[in-house]
Length: 456
Image 1 (tube, rainbow, N blue to C red):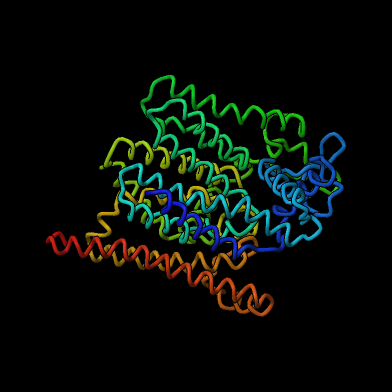
Image 2 (cartoon, rainbow, N blue to C red; image 1 turned 120 degrees about the vertical axis):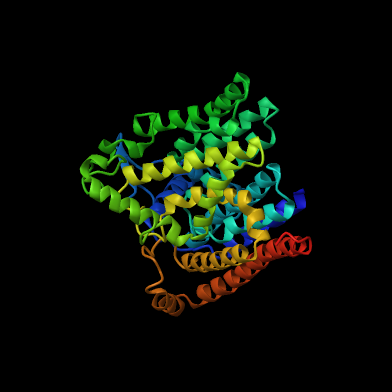
């Protein structure tokens, strides 16, 4: 894809997500980040006890309260605010404006970059421009990524860093020095979402059978980011590990997490409870495939793509995504119990939702060359678009599958937020229509051409 096509794709999703941004801090997750930004800008400190943004997502260390969120997004957000101050624009005093600006610059913008990176990665793997753009459109419009690109949450920007790093690894594999950038982007994903450490561990699968120099360059790039992150953790929490791995930091009077907050609760649950939780986060009321049914087709894409890879690069990428996503899914099942709070679906699955869409390229020809398969795919895609649109309403509050109570929820939302509801409906209607027509055109035009050649 040329630069203009990638830029158009990125801008389309950036603008759509920006218009749907939620200007109200609806959860501790959001206010915790805002408190750090405000403290950095107004008091030059990471300590948040003096902030006007109150949150329960905090820990106590060395006489101060700190946000337990990774600091990279907050540092970037503070830089944005200071940049605006330099041109005499002060947004700290206006909470809604502050939240909107930070969400657009640190979440919606990386979202657009992530979609462009998917298209670029698919093109690097040998897919046509049209197929790459269509699959990237599916990833951006029919998964949980879009709803969570409208709120100040870290999963989308972390996934964006991972995808950019993957593009560097695949596109510039022959130039080992550029793997420093790839390693840095993977490590930056950890600085935004510490659970992405799992992706760095399996990164050698993406690099493949390269020389030792390639692995060293990747490791050097990762260390450039990870060493300062470890140092900041040491200063702010007394350990080089993320603060949410240290339960003692949450044992302060009035702590909502005094009875346990860190990962690793498997020993407190029976096998039956673990199995039930696994079902709930995959196919149940908070299930990955329930909220993004298009990923069911992506699973078949992995099976087919690994059996019949179109190139060694494709095998490497699909192997990396398969192993990384599987390990991540298991870690969520075994290491969490809270479904990530009251959110639309499971917000922790945003990253693997985007990655899993890469496998659609392995079966794209099957979809476009078979009329029945193509129609099934478009139906599933359309239903996924609808579910994504419902999630944009309020991704941090919903907490259950919307099929049962979608109309009452949407009606109540429309009454209390009429302007926002109307804007969301219009934007999502336009985006959904354009996305569906883009994918439909990419499939049917090729399909009609194949039909004339007698392949269908």
